[in-house]
Length: 256
Figure 1 (tube, rainbow, N blue to C red):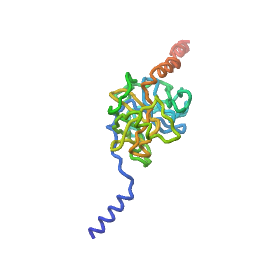
Figure 2: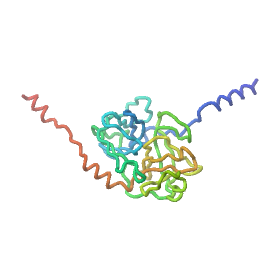
Figure 3: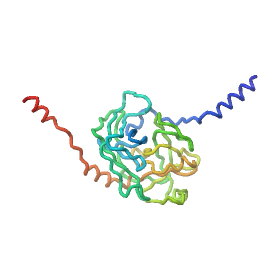
Figure 4: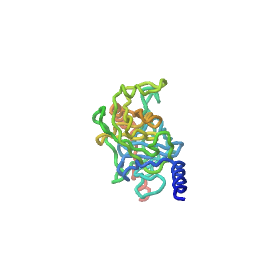
């Protein structure tokens, strides 16, 4: 009888989805943004009170997509969130060429900085092979397994050299100096969430471009090399300065 119960238990275990234990410490990534609505469900990184960055694949829709800040479990309201609609969506040109995959997103109103919502610094230098970085996003960290977004996941990845990354590219993809790769065999290497954020030494160093490690755990995943884009990011921020509403007119109308 005991043997029969053991066989049944093992059978049920085999039929169940694989467990995924890579859940982040809640609210340990206050710059992480969950973008949803308007046909998207992906991640981004807050870089100041108005702006966030994400990949080309994560293509928000102005005034339809919502940026949820201060999130951990996206299936419940935890009282820490700020839900703000997306205003401007600026993709790096040429769009999704072999060279670039980066989108900047401006919010319709500024984020309020709290212990749960805070920006990440832009890079002051580029990541180096062998450096340990941290990737976060909503979705499965198990290769070839889909998981609906719930709690924020975190994995630890080593940066790998460019040649190692190029050797894993399918024939239809081209290497670009605007790419950085991280993850290798016998390491955490899959974050199945568009626009997942890579942070190294407290600086934003990448947003996910191709999640090769979710297809084959031996392959590194590809991230946009953010250290190459500081000038472009700053130029976009300077060119799209939001106009804040003033209180002068309503007050004058009240007095009249």
